[in-house]
Length: 269
Image 1 (tube, helix red, strand yellow):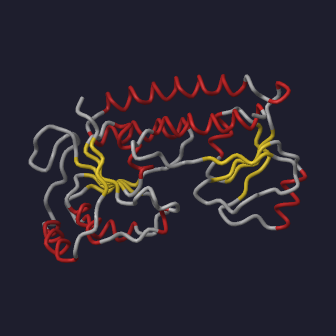
Image 2 (cartoon, one colour):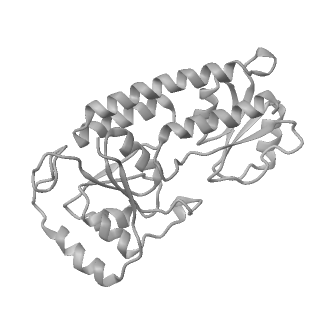
């Protein structure tokens, strides 16, 4: 299989954008079939994604030509404002993947015109949901076999990590955890016992009192939306969970990294 090529869109002038966007004006043209390019040739599709998170789902599903719009250096991706060159890349794609909570989704849709197939991605690292989403994308890309193999690898990896985390449960018991709303999947990875959630807004005094009263052993914070120490003076260990993959678009690494942080917190190392 060809090596995955990941390209990050770079700054270009508004002139470049105006030259490209008219290509999308051909309303009424048929969308490319899954597994084909715009000329009907069988092959891997050209995929543009808003962030590395969507990019990792696309790669897992079998895409190889992937352009990421939001640089990884942008800590909170929804704050990013797409540049003209980003939108030009969108106009040349076969598929454009985005998440509904990203405020620039409207710009992405407008730039895509009628050429690219817009795909809203359910960004959830819960293993069951992630596996289902990857298979769905594989169906769209014409790469079902690759997506199915990746899903099988995910199931195997999660089972392995779960066993390792259970082995370091404090006192041999499932720890009580409070999770930020977008990190609950990490609690499941450790088979921890959920006792509450918070966010995405900062914790209020009333929430602080309520969550602290449940005496959690761990607080699973979101690295991308952190508000600092969530339950100070509660005795709970705060674990930072990273949802977005790196530039290699390896979604499995997200699970491994979360497991490593959980293991350190539970084993006291």
